[in-house]
Image (tube, rainbow over all chains, first blue to last red; front, side, top):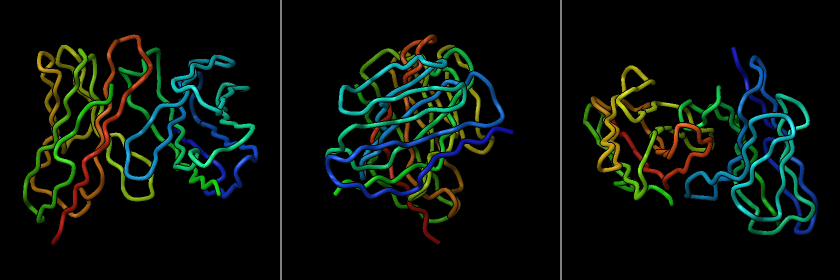
Length: 115
Length: 111
């Protein structure tokens, strides 16, 4: 069976500090990987998605970046955090060639508070 | 553009039924439904695809009107475990990877 991990579970960081969130998937190969952000009381905002190693598509221009150094590893980074970066960050994966056709499975999430 | 969900919130007693709607201004290829409990990750419920294909939860039903770009999720004989926030996510093409999610519908089931 497939499992998706995210860490850390919670994080409190000061404004201007760097960020690194990690996501790994087990039990599958060549998954599509996604980073979402969820602000309090709002829906899921797609930040990045990746269909393969080193292939990153950005949906929202901002001070965040993503990387996929290995097939089942997805990293979300920032050089300098802003207050507006606070939120619940979710990693997800899906099968196949189409994210619109296949269900997405979400990790447990990282709750980030920027102070 | 973000799909619009209605209602924003609903309170049910156990055993009652509910309908949650999702409407888009764009032509859709797929509609996904997820449920999220407070502080947890969203959980997949159902996908409806253009052309009538569906896959997902056995105890939950949904419809997809392609012409109207609308989908509805039907929750019948609600249980306490149905409480949570329901999100629809829309996909606009068979080859696309992105889903655009609505703001969610908060469902509370009380005894």
